[in-house]
Image (tube, rainbow over all chains, first blue to last red; front, side):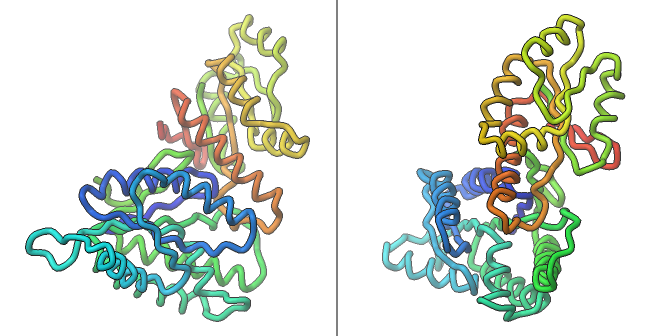
Length: 194
Length: 132
């Protein structure tokens, strides 16, 4: 099952997403796919804050700033190393993953110092890789960001990024079983829903 | 306590004044009332409405204050109050550190108020949707 969770900065989407994955994961092994690259103290503080939110919830963290489908190989390697037992008759353990956050993954795929992919190329790559990744998981919850409503015209590469993330969000929502918008910490169903 | 949120110019204040009656509401703009003002309003049976809460947050951050504590304390003392705030987090994360902090902290204040509020309304095109 694929769930997309969207919201603005400070909307409480991360806290909600972490709680939500924990609820739906059941017996699945829980993974946290971290896409943010840390460059400074503020970034580190954000990572620490999210770690704090997750602590005690039993997530296995995988750093995956680009090429998101590679996270699946890392999960398998981790499971081999820990000799994780698979359910009877299954080749692999049940997995639930929380990918946070699509806005960072998109930026990482699109820029590395300079613009390396167009918005559409980025969207195609990410949507393809998410699809591959989701096939190895029972639940995939993706947190993305609403960056679309400030009415500002930015420089050309930022506008390209906004369009790219817009395509990604629309593509993810089309694939998803459910889409939830978080407003002031309150989840509002946009598509599907349990 | 009630929280009314929505984008810029969506008719949030008008929604409040129509719903509870302009004569019943006493509106403060971008600031919390002083305690004697709030008491005077309460004595007259008026509902204290704090409009443009996000501006209040910005102003207090610029002044080095702690808007979280001030707002929480006011909400606790005046459980009939209404807060109105723009949603300002739905954009590109700003380059400027203060602007980032302002958006983040305003968002978290909204989450905290929503958590404690008896009702949260999101106003879009003048229409209020009760989301809690």
